[in-house]
Amino acid sequence: MKRDSKQFVLRMHVVFGIVVLVGFVLIANLFYIQIANGAQFRAQADGQYVVSTYNSFERGTIYFEERDGTHISAASQKSGYKLSVNPKEFKADREAVYEKINAIVPFDKELFFDALEKNSRSYVEFLHNISKEDGVLIKEAVGSAVQLHAEKWRVYPLKGSAAHVLGFLGYQGDEYAGRYGLEREYEDTLKREDVDLYTNFFARIFHNVQNFVDPEKVPEGDIITTLDPQIQLYFEDQLKSVQETWHSESVGGIIMNPKTGSIYAMGAFPNFDNNDFSHEPISVFKNPLVENVHEMGSIMKPLIVAMAIDSQSIDINTLEYYDTGSVEVGISTIKNFDGRGRGWVDTQEILNQSLNTGMTYIASKIPKQTFRDYIERYGFTAKTGIDLPNEGNNITGNIKSNRDIEFANMSFGQGIAVTPISMVRAISALANGGQMVRPHVVKKIEYTNGFSKTFDYTEDTETVLSRETSGEISRMLVNVFDAYNSGHVKFPDYTIAAKTGTAQIPNPAGGYYDDRNLHSFFGYFPAYDPEFLVFLYTVHPKGVKYASQTLIEPFRETTRYLINYYNIPPDR
Image 1 (cartoon, rainbow, N blue to C red):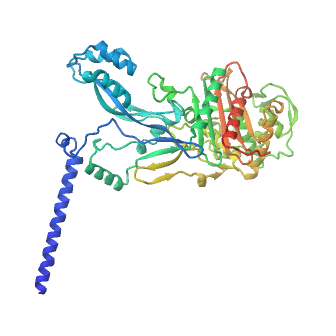
Image 2 (cartoon, rainbow, N blue to C red):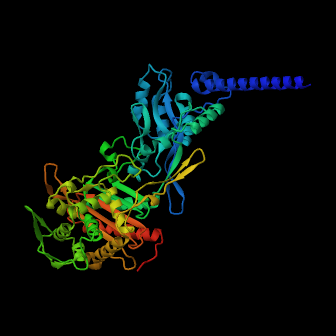
């Protein structure tokens, strides 16, 4: 009896082994047929259990997020058709066919007629990105004279809004992928694997298993950004108005939460429509807020005053300086913007009247190594790490010098060139209690496997200034803004810390242009617990000299909008 029992168990093991082996062979064979040699067996598979649903490509969606959490598509896929013609077999009246199609989807006649001239070919595409509705109408109008083929393409519903942030897709060689902006930065997340682009049960199973077990593969997903479409559109209107009013070479701006680094809006002009950009020069595709560097002028002054206070190089309660309108530093002469002297001034008045001479005096009180250390602490000697491609390198080589004139120039924002995003990050430390935040435009990734990743950089901040220094400089900047234009620009119910800047533009031949300036401006509010930091700049505005003339009003309009949009309560 015991012998029979052992034989039974042995037979069961053999049977089980055979079943496992057969199952493995079947699975391996399915893998071979469906994935490894899918293209080879496609013709045999069609008409059986495989349904042909070939599309151009699949790609994840990029979303903006409104105040209430609503997701608005900023980059997505659209399904429709492309049109082709068979020149070898075309027998219809070409004029009549063109007129019927053109009545539905207007297009250049030459595209159609040139396609028909290629009469040695049996397939020529001549029109793309046709909606499903228009495709049906075209088929009804011309019948089999042309052929419709299913197609998908990338669309940007906001038509150029935040174009520099979003970027676009393009070819580089044979690869069609993200070339600028988020489309490039998150290419591996947004792109979708091409499982021969056939809807197939077994292929999908193996594809998903492969994605799951491959530790090197970046999971596919959709991106939710920090950008608010309402704020973005309004802010871009303000930027465009600056460019049109002053005929500037360029204009740009950023709205960021100085406590978290979340960017609500980022825009620049000249701009482009990422749905239709083939006619644009390549230079316009660069994001100037991330890639370009500028000498920012007097908006650097609060950072220098803050470093002087924080390092105890000056005491703002006792510092006084006699201003004659100019000061000699080595063989150079530094002058105020108007060349006039103000007599005895304190630190507050140096900021209020943006005195280059006074800033030179303050810089002379800061030990050079201390100055260098704070420039590094402000992040100017490194990149911000923003989640956008091609971030530029700041030009800070002058801090290595021991010449007094270099530090004097840097004290009022000349001789040091930084990216706008780097400037915004440094200013945020004045606003948020002295912390260095990480600017970012992506809030969350929702992966196709059901998981998600939320980005929160608030725990990774570094202390740059003491909370007391941050509070003191904010108080001084509130005084600066309240004093602009004899008090006519201040907000009676809100504290706003702000500063203008006007810088000469370097001449590539050496020195600076006499008639070209960069205007810059920043403001954060409510000043002592800020939710928003607004930064603006414009390059070479025409017929105007100072940033107070070009940028204060668009800042005030933007501030009013944000106060109303977010229902920010008064703080004074």
